[in-house]
Amino acid sequence: MRGCGTLCFFVVLGLVLVHGVNGEDPYRFFTWKVTYGDIYPLGVKQQGILINGQFPGPQIDSVTNDNLIISVYNYLNEPFLISWNGLQQRRNSWQDGVSGTNCPIPPGKNFTYMLQVKDQIGTFFYFPSLAFHKAAGAFGSIRIWSRPRIPVPFPPPAGDYVVLAGDWFKRNHYDLKGILDSGYNLPFPDGLLINGRGWNWIHFHRRTYRFRISNVGLTTSINFRIQGHHMKLVEVEGSHTLQSTYSSLDVHLGQSYSVLVTADQPAQDYYIVVSSRFTSPVLTTTAILHYSNSARGVFGPPPGGPTTQIDWSLNQARSIRWNLTASGPRPNPQGSYHYGMIQTSRTITLANSAPVINGKQRYAVNSVSFVSPVTPLKLADYFKIPGVFYLGSISSSPTWGGGYLQTSVMNADFRSFVEIVFQNWEDTVQSWHIDGYSFFVVGMDGGQWTPASRSRYNLRDTVARCTTQVYPKSWTAIYMALDNVGMWNIRSENWARQYLGQQFYLRVYSPANSWRDEYPIPKNALLCGWASGRHTRPL
Ligand SMILES: *[C@@H]1O[C@H](CO)[C@@H](O)[C@H](O)[C@H]1NC(C)=O
Ligand SMILES: *[C@@H]1O[C@H](CO)[C@@H](O)[C@H](O)[C@H]1NC(C)=O
Image (tube, rainbow, N blue to C red; front, side, top):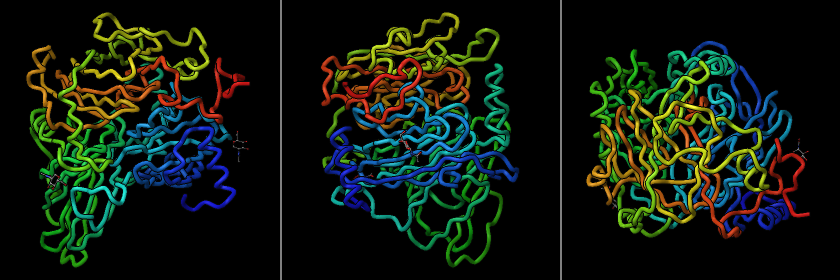
């Protein structure tokens, strides 16, 4: 245990006994005070949501298997929750922090999340999951470092920089939510931010540095590049990659990449550039990479991004491979898990659409536009409260019918190995995220997926990750081992689409009802809706 006295020891012991978090692994404690505060990310004052006074929120640094005990105090005048993009929370969807798993933290109250970053490494982020809070901040980076004796397939970099980048709106988050609530789409974003600002400065010596880039934006894919420098890709959402070199990198909504950059160029200042992808106009923001012995300031225009559109991006996506011989979170090589040899037992096909329902713009999956229930699905399931959702409320394949509103939950068997095909008939890039899991992106291509598309799958060395893009009028296929019991959110990472219903829950169910498969409900679980007044422990 780190930074923890005797009293704290007993608190921890209590947590271990009651919540099943692993007592042998270190604990890290965080106290987060969530408040409103003025921010000026694009030079205009707007209402931000701050964590401990910070925008973006504080960084979480952890090591594989650490227990993270995060107490969140909600000083807003509205309900609030934080969720964890990419943390798998094995057996523990109780802590996922989305409206389908957790009751909101009421104004003036607190909730303590108890997470374990079990068997994970890599680059992720957290974000506020309710309303349109993400447009006001309260997101931050999560780094999970390898344990000391697990080999990392590159020498320790001289520095490790987080780049939280994405599009930004000057309008207040209530106004943006109001636009969506009244049935309209969002306006074009006002700009791009890097780490909460339009301008940054990074200091280089003649060494190699790691950049961890996450797209924390709301509506657009981005491209990341550094003037005069190549980037060596080393990690994608917890997978160590073959270290290919790129001059620029597309990062879709919700995705995270780590690259190594070596300061081997003439000593001057260089632009770090983030620009929007597949938008017109193209938004651009820059930061400055400053060599310690720099002889002059930035020179010339910032380098432009890729001009060819979808094909370039698709080819880049396909070039990203798993390094089969490198270790992941465990000492054995990542590639010793032969995902391509496992027989899939089920194919789920998910088609996105943009129906108008009751005169309002909505977004849907297999024709269902998700509506959040007042009682979280996970609690309704646990307390066996009828009428909150029913299984089969969303089809496992496109229905092509008109869109309708529903609290959609799909059932799935624990320990099955499934194929999911995301079919995108719209003309915009989609980005899909699955909570609780890491999945193998076995293929993507233009047109309609058919069983014959399987012959072109990469069954050998694609990466395992938690967020994948689907190009316009294209499909993306993934393989996923359903080894994590729980109620898991599958959502668009486009925040307008997510908010207007392009999401649902996958209920990965084990009939065994054993603590080996799923932790018991936390004693501190907040209760709301029809779960109010129930008991989290047997009487
Ligand atoms: C935090 O929440 C707990 C449980 O609701 C409560 O007992 C405690 O008083 C709260 N602490 C503060 C400082 O509000
Ligand atoms: C893959 O990982 C191994 C083991 O760490 C490393 O030696 C090798 O250079 C890596 N290969 C590539 C192409 O990145």
